[in-house]
Image: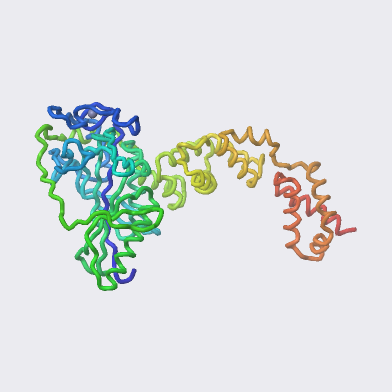
Length: 481
Ligand SMILES: [Zn+2]
């Protein structure tokens, strides 16, 4: 990409984890039988009046503070007018213009060791729409359970310049909202969703090119692939002297392409105006400071602490703090086994590999921090070998059993006693006369092979240091014959 520079801005919608909806007391939980969580307010029936959810407003303020935003002293709700079957009032209550709850923040993002600051333009509060379910044929059904669920929108400046940066920005943003406990971060369920807009411009120029917007990105991987595809598609058009069309495009994850969803030749006119049924919001400095108090240690601070106090490499600290649950698991394990780098290696290695293969998050895993610590203790005190530990861990992951149980049940304890190791070593020596001869003739490499055979003979249970020592002893005896 020498010739063109990608310019990406990101809109993120995050459903807030409040008990009730934004303007009524219906449950805001995900799921439930269709249309079971509705009332006159969230169905937009005439005569119903909205009342703002204070918790949702507090959550947005906390997020805005965590994103280094300024909190507006005055803020109001607007009506965004448009027709769509999932919007029963024919308008969505949102926030428009200069007075969103939070303005002017930033998130620092590290890609390939280089840290860049992505500015946040605004953080505001609105309500979610219902959900259309396309039933096939000409039929569509609508479920209003989601109608009126508090939705936070976080809009970045167009400061992102690659698909990697976009993905990393979202990873950090998701970490922040999940650490705060204001959102569950579930991209696949749509409670944390993003819509990037992207354009290309000749490198070294300022003016933005024509942009497209991308929808249907349900995973970090989809964000990366979708943007990568769109960057290449626009680049090809521009290189051939063509023009990019201003439109919304849909990412097709199966085919790995973006396709036109709807044109934007006519910018929709929403006729925003202040919502007359809701009072303006006034935030005193005291109220804002009170919202700062419950902020937990945020991912950036945790990351820094892991590097400075625990001596972890920045890369480890970054991965470990990507989700709150992952970081907490690490810290819990550390309490019982205080060797940060060893715990980190297991979490980033075997544990992550198994989680990925199973397609689950750490919170859904059966492994408990105390059991991972127990396993690491058994390795460090020589009860089991590192190799055996890997298979024990797989079983822990599979069944949730403790490492002590598994090792006991399967008789996996490490063999260190000479009485048990000599027979295995003698067997290997007698079965491999040629290799023994090579070793005695000066071929040191043959020794490794013999150690390997002893390990195999004992099904990996032999203590490698003991095998080394005893095997050399036995070979020295053989040499004298
Ligand atoms: Zn309701």
